[in-house]
Image 1 (tube, helix red, strand yellow):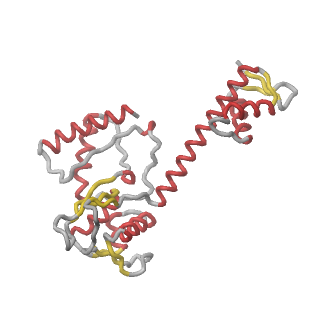
Image 2 (image 1 turned 45 degrees about the vertical axis):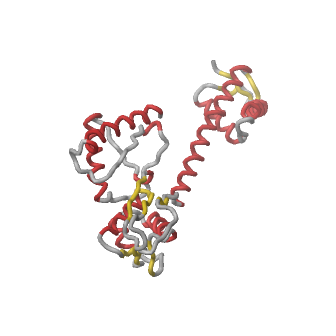
Image 3 (image 1 turned 120 degrees about the vertical axis):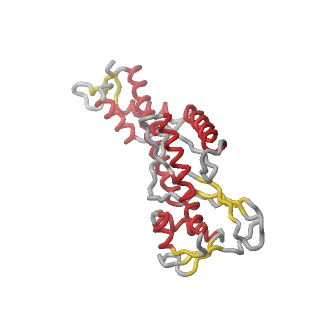
Length: 269
């Protein structure tokens, strides 16, 4: 993981020197990319389709080409649901300075649709951004609650119109709109729970092996008791999880049932 962070810093420095600082290409945005190895990071693929906004497309294409020229054979998978950025908004009536909106990339895609028009329907935004309906609904809820946009009509209807709020006011000139979506929070919680469960299974198996390596032969009830005793300072393993771990270790031939004794186990060296 530390190698990925350093590699990403070097990649971005070289990319900026070649395509941004030198002025060889007009990317149009200031961007940086975090490149991570799939096997080292527990990151899930996007749960929604997505159409890259035109202002971002050139920079993404150039970075992809730049990366593949340096690392032939590798493939980048873009996790747009985890990316973020800043948008400068200058359309407000009461201030010439405007506001800097800190947004997710999905939110950015929605707001960039208003560069040419002041009002768009939910259906228009869905078609243009290709963001899934459930995620787009949450995005629109955040933007209307923050009063960046104003919704006219039933917010559950595809025909609902959303228009720019020219009267928006904030005490801060940097407005953070990038709050977690409900679906993302649930997905993240589920993934974290799954990783915790997998880690605990490995710890239970390791504890059982340590105990049996010392005892050589042990009954089921005593093995369960000693396993709980070893792990209780970290977490309290459940009896079904310990039983499953014992079964797995038998399959892997770390343990074997004692002949003629169903609830007694031998350690296999």
